[in-house]
Image 1 (cartoon, rainbow, N blue to C red):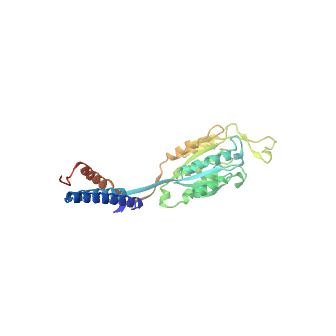
Image 2: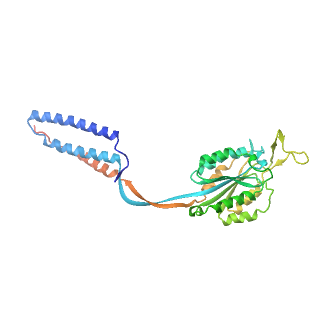
Image 3: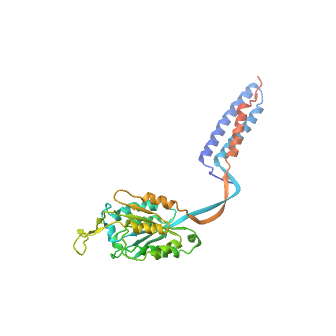
Length: 322
């Protein structure tokens, strides 16, 4: 048998107070018995009764725990890779203060919501790179998120196939039985501008591997200019480059992998809807084990103590004959 609470100073104080009060009561009864020239035999019966239910109350307070029951404990979870577009178009200001800064503001909500799952961070433009492998370390993820900027990747346009292929590779590298049974999710954050080709093959491979892609589009249909130096990026004819949110590409990626598309624009953010959608993906079993369970049985001594207190209050003894 084990105890839910250790014997503490509180229980000791209660015990000392009880002993002192009852000792004073017995001394009084002894003096009264001597005065009446009688022996207070029934006083000792009452004392035994009250010591019994007071002890039972202390036992209930300490919480006796015993039993031989067993319980199966299952831990479930997801592996989530977050791929963030760091091409120069993510510096556009059609979403204030910029597309990328808005993403950095919203990302902590996603990370915090899934702090019991493994999360990894990918960055990409024309190529994809691992910024953080799958980890439970929220502090590291927060640090990597805060330092995101478009200078971390080559400035050669955007290829959406790159993060898809990188995510597939990283999920395949996880060879443990637990990871093979875990739900795999890719969150693709981009403005959707794609200067590459051949998304078909990586999408087929992702679907075959059971990876759901949730795409989060950042930008607006009207588009915005890209800051460069003291002005804005210009095309070959000297006009300001306008970058627009390409919804169709991101919607196709999501639909081909049984995922969903969400958006952050100048009016609203659907990050909470994205979180809800990921929550709806059933996390598969990571680990299962059986443990012994000893339940707190405080109610047994408590019930017995209450019954004895009721008996003490209702049954009266004639201690002295007058």
